[in-house]
Image (cartoon, rainbow, N blue to C red):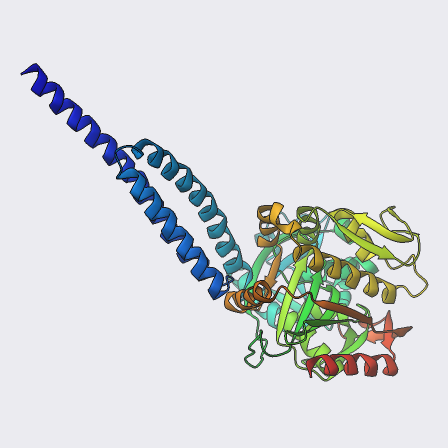
Length: 480
C-alpha cells in the first residue's frame, strides 16, 4: 500500500510539473499572438519582415512546447518559456505604448482657444459675479470666440453684461488701462503679442474667469499615397508651453516638400514676421499672427504666397522640442558664425553639440544676426534637419521610450497613423538615405499696420519677390 501511495504521489507531482510547464508555454503563445497583432496594427513593419517575425515566434513556441512535452528537457523548457514570455511582455509593453502615442498625435483636427475675463490687478472684483454692472470690452478681431464667451459670461451673471466693441485686443486693453471699461474678454493666444506693447501686461492685469472652447480644424486636402506621391507638410513651431492643441502664434513656419520617389526633402523657411495676406479676413498681418486664427489660416496664407497646396501639418511646442532633443541624446548643428543668444548661451563658429535647451536657444535667436529673422529661419531648418537625421539613425533605438514620451504630449499632426506607418514601412524596406535641402526666403524690414494690431503699426518683413519666386520653383521642382 505504501508503495502504491508513493507511486500515486509521484505521478501527480509530475503531472503538476507538466501542467506548470504547459501554462508558461501557452502564456508564451498568447504573448506571441499579441505582439504580432500589435505590430500589424501599428503598420510600420514591411510585409516580408512581418512574415519572418511571425515565423520566428511560431518556431519559438513549437520549440518550447516540444521541450515541455519531453520528460528529459521539461524543466529546461519551462525556464526557456518563462524567459521568452518575459521578453515578449517587455516588447508588448513598448509596442502598446507606441500605438497609443501614435494614436494620440495623429489625425489632429481640433484647436483650443482659452478665453479669459481680465480686470486690472487692483480691481476690487473677486469673482465673475462682481462684474455684473461692469462695461465689458470686446474685440471684433476675434468675433467668433468672443460671441461664445460672452454667452457663457451671460449665463454666469444671469444676463448679458453691457459691452463696448473695439476693433482689436490692443484697443480693448488700452480701454481697460485707462478706465473706459471695467473688464475685457481676452483670448490667451494674444498674450505674448500684447506683451510686446505692454511689457507689464501680466502684472497690470489678472484673470477673473476663464473658459476653453474647442473648434474643429478644417484643412482641406486631396488624398495622398504618401509612399508614391510627393506631398507638402507645414511645420509649425508654437510659442507656448502646454497643451499642443492650444491656439498660439507660430514662431517656426516651414514648408517641407517630400518626394518619396526621389527620397528628397526641400525645406522652405518663411520669416515669422513676413507681411502676408490672411485669406479668411482679407487683410494683411505678420505670418506669426496667422497662427492665432488657427493652423488652417497659417496654411492658407502660405498656400497663397507660394501657389501650392499643403497636404498635412505638424505642430510642435517648445516643451516638446527640448524634450525630444534631450531624448535623442542631443544634436549637432553647424553655425556660420559665433554668437551669443538671447539667454546668454554662446555658440561657436562651426559644429556645436547641443542639448534640448541649447537647441531651442539656437533656433530662437535673431537679434545677434545682421539679417535677423532670415538667419533664424536658416538655423531652425538646421535644427530640424539634425533632429530628422538623428531620429532616422540607429541611435534612436537606445532612447526609443524617452523619444516617444517626449513626442506624446508635444507633437500633433494631421497625418493619419496609417500614413505614418506606410512611410516608416517604406524606409525600413529601402534603407535609402534622404537628401534634405533647405532654402530661407529673404525680405526687407518695414513698418505696416496689421489686422491683429489694428491702427498701431508694427515692424514687419516684406518678402522679396525674387526670393518668393525661387522658393516656388524649388517646391514645384521637388513636387514634380
